[in-house]
Length: 444
Image 1 (spheres, rainbow, N blue to C red):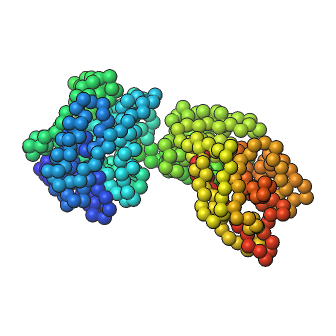
Image 2: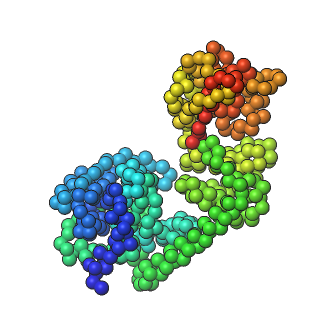
Image 3: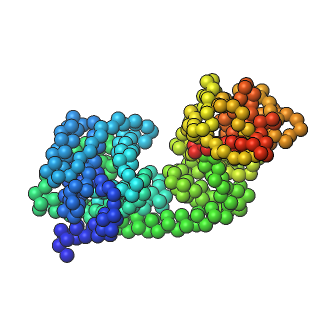
């Protein structure tokens, strides 16, 4: 098989997906590999169906020239062109990680439901990724390298050239007379991946010329180990009474204690992944087991990491989405009870009309406040009033929700607390119209 026919066949596994896709995007940096990928894809399908995406990181004096080069080539092919200049937020992970995060944020933002994004990563990129992750202490999931395909936001990311070496792609690009840009930052060894590419791999290649094949085999075996670990975690999770909760999910602590520590760690890693969240690192997992799972029974510990929070309450372990959404305790809100209302912490209030249940409709609007301390009320059917603090504990509302639960007031009286209860004297009579309030919180 010729090199060209082999490269063209790289799209064969995705032929049906390409035919059905409502959107086809191509990541276009202007480098050799992405220029070749766009060229090959443009030969397979109508150019009007393709949109190239160029991310301008604004890190080089030539960044605007590279953007213009990409735009000109897309115009030549008749392909739609989109570009976005990003501002990098550098954290402890460094500039490379910040640039990658910014790129993928743009890709995900541009994807529509069932859209496809093609990226030009090749086998040399895969080897660098595996070696880089090995040096960072990754486990089987990390050492499996980049997947050929995965979900990304509402669409799917595809790397059709992942099994081809950079040299094979470059030979094809040269044979075609393609032109591309060279990023001078690729020679800067202060970046980890560049150092691996420019300094480490040449030394390895002298001693072990077949290192790419060996490392890719190891990546394949790591992927198999990762799949087995995932299957085991999902089987364990299915036995732990998973419950959908406000802002997340919970599992049985008793069931978790029935697993070995190794399986507990495995479950925590894949529990996040099963909910489309970033798997926690080994360090974070150890902290969860020590500070949350291993805490005394009367404690209310939490571990917050990135967009996730692990907490414990009533002998259950919670995995919660975390966005640090604060509530506004100062300014009351007014709600007409007719429309869905989004609160400051992104929670949602709505209501449906019922008969003989819920809150009696005796006013045109309700005022929404939050706990200030000292509130008292008497839930419908109770003999005596109690402090709100005591009632929230009695109704088993988790501690992290007690300052967030909306309090509904009418005529300066507390008439309902979230969707937990209606206060005495404000419940709809059996033959009267009432409103059943629903409070939905997707993240803390």
